[in-house]
Amino acid sequence: MDSELFSLNDRVAVVSGAAQGLGHATALAVAQHGANVVLVDRNLAGAEATAAQIESLGRQTLVAATDVSDPDAIAELFREVDARFGRVDFLGNIAGDGHLSKPEELSIANLHLVLQNLVVGRFAMCQEAGRRMLAASRGSIMNIGSLASSTALGRGHIAYSMAMGAVVQMTRELSTEWSHRGVRVNCVTPAQVVNPSLTARMADDPTLEGRFLRGIPAGRMGQPRDIMGLAVLLASDASEWITGAIIPMDGGNMAMNAGGTPGHEQRSVQSFRAENK
Ligand SMILES: NC(=O)c1ccc[n+]([C@@H]2O[C@H](COP(=O)([O-])OP(=O)(O)OC[C@H]3O[C@@H](n4cnc5c(N)ncnc54)[C@H](O)[C@@H]3O)[C@@H](O)[C@H]2O)c1
Image 1 (cartoon, rainbow, N blue to C red):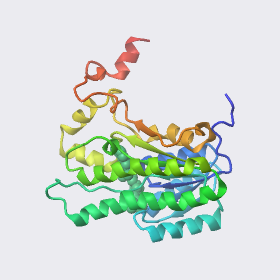
Image 2: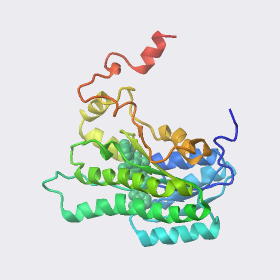
Image 3: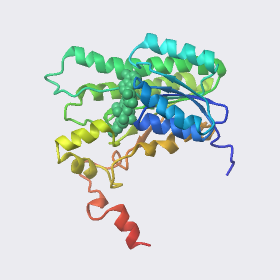
């Protein structure tokens, strides 16, 4: 295989949510393949810890405590990126919160907050990065959507689902307008990936993890590291003809009909491997 295929040497990646979870894993993955990384997270100490890991690989970093729901702060962030690196090759558009509420109880103020965070914020990041990528005629954006981009989760996810649906359409529109000018835009839609808020919800409701696993034929919850390969693929020239794609990262969840039976109910992947050694 061409050893340059996945090289990100000398490229600059901007990654939001870089203090933990999917953002941390994305930042680390692109740095391991050669990129210098702008680490964006309102948790400054967490982003600085990620920066220290990346600098130990010999890459350069810029850390910013930007709130990605604030377009003015995002514009300022990209001015800092211009001054420091003068280019943006990859955007990992990852940070952003939802809000849980029954549809009949959701306040319009909370709906606005979620849309501001996940739709306006993600768009402002795409717009600032995209303007620079268009000027250079090259670049790649990885938006993070969710299973909730195209299926309903229930359990109070109405605002989150409405926003994540918009992220998928944002991806398709931007890809359609920008890909002939060298800028690719894709969306990764994860199923349940372990993080602190999910862990707390599973602790509150002991039936939840089992219900999640019944929807995941691969037989385990996602881990942040599961995004590392996809992030490198989408950031690199290896995915030159992949744009406008909605890419499930979900252990087979979206492929399975709601009435389908995942094989792991009979045995785990680990026991399957042990039996077939
Ligand atoms: N974990 C999952 O199961 C899952 C599934 C599908 C989609 N997603 C989406 O992926 C994204 C990342 O998920 P995760 O599991 O890595 O979450 P996480 O909670 O582990 O990490 C999110 C990070 O983003 C930062 N952040 C949140 N809002 C911010 C803001 N407004 N400005 C700056 N930083 C902010 C937090 O400080 C945190 O470091 C979220 O948008 C989430 O909705 C997650």
